[in-house]
Image 1 (cartoon, rainbow, N blue to C red):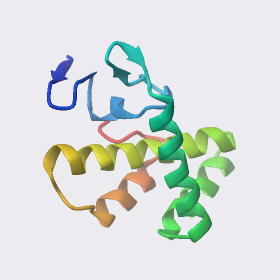
Image 2 (cartoon, one colour; image 1 turned 120 degrees about the vertical axis):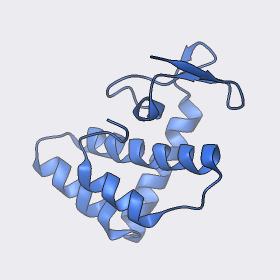
Image 3 (cartoon, rainbow, N blue to C red; image 1 turned 120 degrees about the horizontal axis):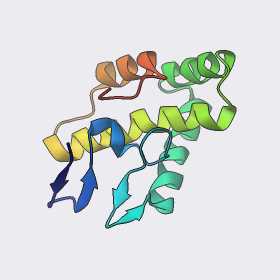
Length: 115
């Protein structure tokens, strides 16, 4: 059910739980809920993607989620979960950023990555 990844020193329940926003299950870092610096950095990435329209799917996803009834903050947090999942995969698997995987995960929202 849960495992500890000693190289990254945090406990997680699944890939989806690496989302630092507490929408489903809060990431637990060193026994504490979330990391405010990480949350802010990921939200900055989301804001930058929307501002720069790069990739355009980020803004499209945001608009779709808001239209479906999610608050603006929750829409950004959901997109942030995709960003954090992608970063986690890049670090854990030492892969390059995969734009196709990222866009597919955006399109599946509000279903979180790994669900």
